Image (tube, rainbow, N blue to C red):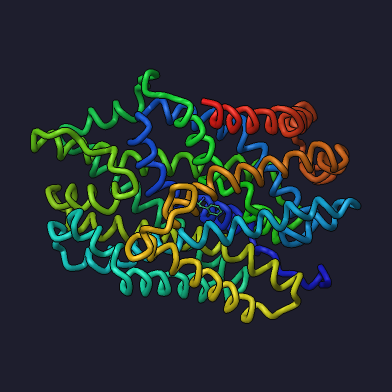
Length: 452
Ligand code: PHE
């Protein structure tokens, strides 16, 4: 494929919002709050933040740089940069990880569509746990909503990078920020919310164990979308004058702030309503936190019905902007490696993810007896993606950058050919973190988890 014909993002803001849109998603609004609840609150958040700053940010920068340098898809990039063809395995890993993630992500995306539709009935009391469990374990309805979600994602991607991804992300991300702040303000101003705020920000270290540290690592990779080729793919559509370091920094700040605000929108509200009813807050509800616990909170909250509509709209927007980054990773790969048109590539991606999505969805019901390593298909894909494929992909990626790529080439890309005034000490520190600290940390946390 001739690189001069390749599309690019149209503006700095467009790049930033598309990347932030890829990062901010169900990971921030659904996965982060329930993992915080399951793993003891502030201590988990503290470890998570350490991983974001010292590990994920340098990896994000590197993945972005690989895409921008090669202007190729996740597979083609490694092929182009290395004479040793075995490195292309990272590309295979990355593209498979993206498909794997999208396969269970689209199911939760489908649940969000369903809950947005239901929230318009203004009857939150009907959305209790038996309703949720009945819905996700039925055969047809969640599968149909999964298809709807994937069709919306594919519909945006057919339009291309500037007219589809960039335009959609720009409008939606602004709306998203506005909505989540509004909901967080409502949550923290409820009587009794202070306990929830304390839970989020005052650490109790005794709650932290090895599992929680591995989950914090997995979640930091998942939330920043690193290790599965999506950042590389978006990076490949970025022009050469973009400052990789500052835009990566902004994306991580946005993503982390958004996760914390989403935590504030959810956890204090759960505490406040439990306090009102004199019961213990059910923040350890796991994946059902957003779909079971929250509707009951909305039900009792002043203006709760309206907040519910806004919340599920926010959840859906966040999910779609991330899903498009996942599908685009596969689509760009197909266009460049299989030489198919964008429309055809989207149809193929839609078909494959729908098929896998059906299995993930049915594993909540008729296929719940099918277990892989003791987990149902949905949980298997979820855990496999965050705790194995993404961290594994990230590990291989840092090995590649640190040990196969030339240091000068890497630094040249980060500094736009030494023109963007990023200090040399910073560039060198990032390089050495990527070369030594990152692979060793990932190895230690993963091995420790097997031993402990
Ligand atoms: N970061 C996204 C989220 O937080 C999920 C995602 C993972 C998107 C990997 C793209 C790649 O929801």
